[in-house]
Amino acid sequence: MTIRHLALSLKGAGRANNEDCFSVCEELGLFVLSDGMGGHNAGEVASDIAVHAIIEYLRENMGNDEPDQLLEDSVAHANSEIFDAGREIAERRNMGATLAMVWQQEDRLYVVHVGDSRVYVFNPEHARSLTEDHSVVGELLREGAISREEALHHPKKNMLTRALGVEAYVQPDISVFQLPVPGYLLICSDGISAYLPLEQVLPQIAAKVKREQILPVLAELAKEAGSLDDITGILLWNEQEQEEASAND
Image 1 (cartoon, helix red, strand yellow):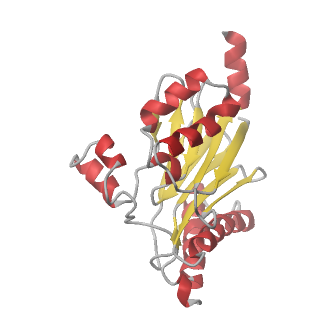
Image 2: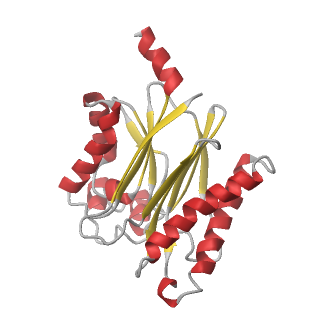
C-alpha cells in the first residue's frame, strides 16, 4: 500500500501565530497533527513539542514493542514533554495540545487521537469520523443530549476533557483501520471540523473537485462559516489502489 498525501495549514484571521503544527514522516509512514492551546505563544510551543516528540520517540523505538504499546508510549512521552515544559515557565503553565495522527504499518492504518482534532474517512458517497472528540460537546453528543447541528454552535464546543500536557498522564484512543477504495482520510484541526458538518460536506467536495482542491475548498468553506481559528488538514489516499480502481472503471 502506497499512501500519498497533501497538506495545508493557515494561520487564523487576526492571530499572531499559527498554533497548529503538523508533520509528515515518510520513512515511518507517519502523519501527525496537533492543535496547541495556551496564552503567550504557549499553544504554538505545545503543538510543536507534541508533533516532534511523537516522531522522535517512534524513530528511536521502532520495532521495540507491539504497535499499540509503541503508540501509547509515544503519546505518553509527548504528554510528559509538554507537561514538564509547562512548569518551567510561568506563562506556559496552562499550555496543552490535541493530537490526531495516522501511522501506516503495511496494509493497516493506526489512528491515534487525544482532544478534538479529528480523522475522517470519506469518498464521494459517504463520510464518517474515525475519532470521537474528548470534549464537553463530544460527551453531550454521545449521550444524545444535543444534535450535530447544535454541536456546531454550542457555547462550550472548545472545552476539552482530554489533552496532551494538562495532566501527568493522558489516555489516547487507538484504533486500526483499512482504507477503502476509492477513499480518503482527512486529519484536521477544529478550525475546520468545528465549523462544518463534514459528514455532509466531504462527500460533496470529493464528488465535485479535483484532489488537489479538496483542502483549499474546505478551508474556504470553514472561513465562510465563521472560522477565525487556525486551519490545518492532511489528506491521505492509497495511490496504487486508486490507480487500479480508475483503470478498471
